[in-house]
Image (cartoon, rainbow, N blue to C red):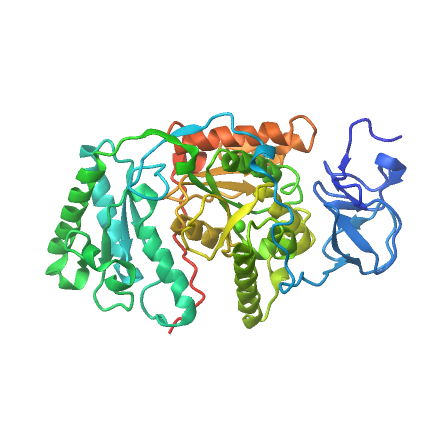
Length: 508
Ligand code: CA
């Protein structure tokens, strides 16, 4: 007898696999009278009809790959069952073929938020003093100085939210003139100017590094007020004293900043996913996509990234690019990434992690289709490289690595004031410069990490809540967090990852 409650979910009419909504046992009968030939763990795929070797397997209506052997209905389909299809070509991408008008996107329930206005660019979601190093050699000094600033100075500046040591692995021992060095250099340049730092520049170097001030600052910005070289200081106490004095001056200016009511057009939000599972693409990511569509239709700018995770859907994204320029930039950035992976002797299928596979994601095509869902339906107004600032509003494709730890800093360099982070398997990930809201794909995840996951999209798979309902919850929480009314769990606990900026250029 078939189970009374649905136990599998099929997403598209073309699909010949369905996803197990809970752990299913061999011998159980599922929808359609199919008797399971294998145990099917939750989120994994079951084949819905007998198929032959070489037959395509469809999920999201998209071919995930072809079967490596004859397979009967009711069998488990995983990474050992499928051959990867060829990746989509880049030479014949079409643009402006699937442009949804703003009026057809979900409309935002609120159109303003409370942020820190900047003289140009997006507004701040926090009021922070950011102290940026030019080289890792200075990191230890800066971290210690930041501890002292927090305990000795910050209590006198109640309107400043915090002090951040923006340290990173770049700066010296690198081929600074290599073509790809532009990526880490512009990332650091843009980090200095992050909207949450309110235009206050504070950069500390060692003195003999390759990343000199003139590479990351304008000539008029290189002043004793903004910059300091440790090698020019006379001993430890003078060094610390100089940093503390600089910080005190900057804190005094930041102290005058106040939140004000701003339109959504002053907001820049990033999205990424990490520790994905087979539910990510049907619950958390489409819900985030709905929130993104609301933000974009309200005038905000929303950024999605992770090239290896959209590589297999690049032909779908290009059709959403508003113009030829964006489409050509997309092709260029993706071609660069293909070469980057080839140089390392791998292809895009190096992406799914053991955790992804244990979560039911068989290969990169399946992961890509789920990942793309977070971009919603809005037109893509601009395509940028890692660490670049967008020049347009709306939905932005920022071509960063998918690695959580590198995508985050890249998007921060691009100026995001907040990140939506979708996860299936769970991660404590957080960013010190921009708050991170954690959205999980399954209720089991939320129950396990009940005090670390901000929102669960799991009810979508159970039919208890719609994508629109969860998407609206994400939208509202994003505006509350951006406005400083709420703190996501990662900030409550102070779980913040290192700024691993992307450096594809040689280390010498
Ligand atoms: Ca990621």
